[in-house]
Image (cartoon, rainbow, N blue to C red; front, top):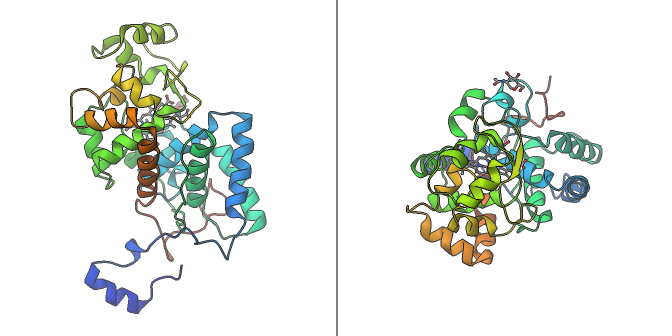
Length: 312
Ligand code: HEM
Ligand SMILES: *[C@@H]1O[C@H](CO)[C@@H](O)[C@H](O)[C@H]1NC(C)=O
């Protein structure tokens, strides 16, 4: 809440640092914007009723925000080229929903709530509205004044990644291999473009042949933007089918199947496939941890008036 004082910082020297370690809080806006969570929920309800996939798209948008400079709304900025980084260009979506919700929040509590926090809430609500777990979202992030295409290209995992690459990219963000395996369960919802999995369905050996044949029907080996569900069983429902698919060699991305290919995450994939309740609970915890990646707090950054642009 209150920015750390000089005295706090002196004390905190014992513990290494100050501003960078300021805590987020689930009650951050309870006095300054009590209607925030209701406004976001109403907006997300409307958006998901209009297009179910949007719940998945906002979950992914938050992930892509957090892995680049921390959860600071950088992915929402039009300048800086982050939106055009390879993992984002022609792929990330949901900006219109963030804008509509931000407009409602600004009308109720002008100048108070960051775009980064609104994005964190839309990811939680998108997950929940598609049948997933819910959790209290720690809040108090402020918005960046910069975005970075280079960091997005360097930090966001490609769908061609092997397990060692996935583990090291998540470790870089302070997330363990187990948390990476839980968070990857987000691929139980949403759609993907052919160009992100054509290599797998034409070249990989560890794939169920009938699943490969099914996906090849709408995805040529040269790749294009045709869409397919990431979870072949229940693409509109947040459940544990993603892990059951991996056991059956029906992971859509090379990186999905890398979690169950004779390596360190095999056991956890089996556990999640057998225990959806364990997956839901670990996913919620890992989302809170991911949401804690390098937030801007105190007087760092700003509260953007328009999520697309830095304040003038
Ligand atoms: C583990 C490494 C990961 C890789 C390599 C990866 C890669 C991808 C790719 C390539 C797509 C399809 C994009 C497109 O074709 O336009 C996708 C979609 C998606 N990803 Fe991931 N992802 C990873 C982790 C995550 C995490 C941690 C989350 C969230 C917690 C997430 C949530 C999603 C969702 C929900 C979609 C569907 C989005 C939509 O339908 O709009 N992914 N991912
Ligand atoms: C992003 O996609 C657009 C439209 O497909 C394309 O014209 C542009 O060159 C791409 N930008 C980058 C940096 O890849």
